[in-house]
Length: 368
Ligand SMILES: *Cc1c(COP(=O)(O)O)cnc(C)c1O
Image 1: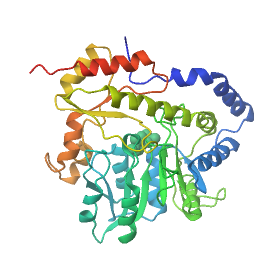
Image 2 (image 1 turned 90 degrees about the horizontal axis):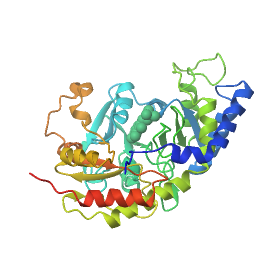
Image 3 (image 1 turned 45 degrees about the vertical axis):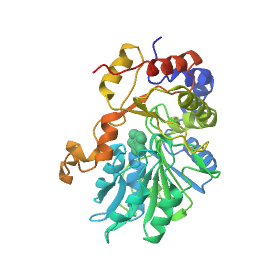
């Protein structure tokens, strides 16, 4: 049995007619940027997140970057982020001239350890970016308290958590401004690049929209030096179709994850902690294994594709040599980089495939 890491045909072929219709609609409209489709999708996604506003942008990285700019964060400011996130979170901070300050995660949740945030706050700290890593909501209640007490802006990087919710409040509605990516492999993915912000603050929404459109809200009148970062009509049309299925796909992800929790019982594998239903939409199913590289080879030989999220932590990336960090400075981020492996989990996985992954993982024993 050959099991890919993910499979787009499983979700796209059943809605092929709808996607083709969306394409033809844009094609015939002769309007390809900033038209009815992006407007519609923004409304629908704001409604889905239960926020007042949604603004489409070019990708998830720009969503974070433009949010920081809209909040007035810039040169010399410090922004707290987790030490084990995807590099985009850090890059967005660096792009606006601010300094990413890394805080170690909890190994139970893989999300930022709330008890370690306050020791990193200085007079220069302006914001916290909470990342819902692997699809699991960060502890927003705790983080919000810290942000409020210290008068910091709070941003959610929700690139991996479309539809995750706690107490019926969705990712995207748990902070001052939230950022999403619609990279194809995300829980809600376009057929290309795309991103968005959600917020309840009209000023922030207007500012992000202007920033992504050359700093202009009125054609040819420029109030800021903005960039070009917009969600295009085709991607918006595809996303509107796919949004109708997001909940169904997320539920399927949760079901598969629960099978993994029930079935995987290998002593050399550490599973993530289970959490309340809906708080995790399992963008990724991360497991830890001390002999990770050997384990990955073994799975590959058994025709199970896997990925590592992420093999090099931010502080050890060449791009961040300027941080002056060395091995050992962020031991938990390093542990995750050394031991994490993501096993296949995608809508449309068959029972046989799920069982085969469980069985194969359970049969692994390290021959050292
Ligand atoms: C994917 C991702 C991003 C960046 O999104 P792009 O659309 O690829 O620019 C940012 N943060 C996290 C946590 C991500 O997973």
